[in-house]
Image (cartoon, rainbow, N blue to C red):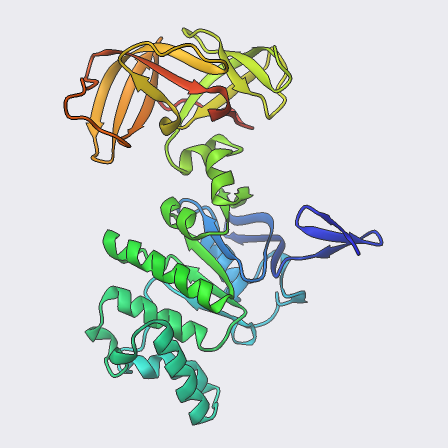
Length: 386
């Protein structure tokens, strides 16, 4: 038996990877642009893994390296322990779904799904059985005779998924597959993809710039920035404990507070000075010593707002502020308040809402507070963006 360490096993001094699809130090240039810069990461078998980031961060290039549409300038790509770096796309047990779906307009739904098996000259009875299975999976058996121009965007997307899965790939690659759909249809198709993944159980590598898509679908996410991986983790880890200012800002909204560590009155907590504010208390998970500059990130929904001063509580930060802007959003209200010269965003959830309650309005004095555990330190300093 080996000792499990950081996603792999060590046995007799040698590392034995538990990853199913691996990128080992891969790099790729396009002219002077380094699209992917020495990336190493691994996907587990059966995992729904997302590459998330803005345009130009390298996520689509990573997918194309896995598919075989691009060759790395350096590094290797492995699938189930086998080096596939030099294999052409048709020799890899991976299939790709593109944003455009790329369905054949002259073929029916049934024939589109059957295309790969037909080209492979599989027996007709096997093709018919496999296509029937896929039609049931995507709940489109009654649409089998239609052609793509007779389908909605969501139906086309499901046919593209079925056509990719019918060949039983080891990995399904999805390149921004929902980008062309409207908001409500995207939300529906997110649930469809999640259900299909649960039913077929193969590894999904999903590329998107939409953090809501990645957060709702993924077992793990790799956030990419400038051709490199900024952070890998579960959706909760990425959101609740981002390592850098880029990750904190890209995944949802946050408040950045620039300050300096003053002292550490307790082992796990430190006090931080922010100009114009009383000393803040913060969980010091980065073990930053006294005297060092630090950037804190506090999510808007972690900040509580009230007309009246709340009771003092241990490990709570409490500040007096003035409301500068209010946006009512139905399920919640967004406030922008200014405390000691610093602008702070607050998100108040309407878990209970009373019409006769005195509302917090523009220019009102107010109090804001948050727990020390809800403010986290970042590895890299960044500006507030105010």
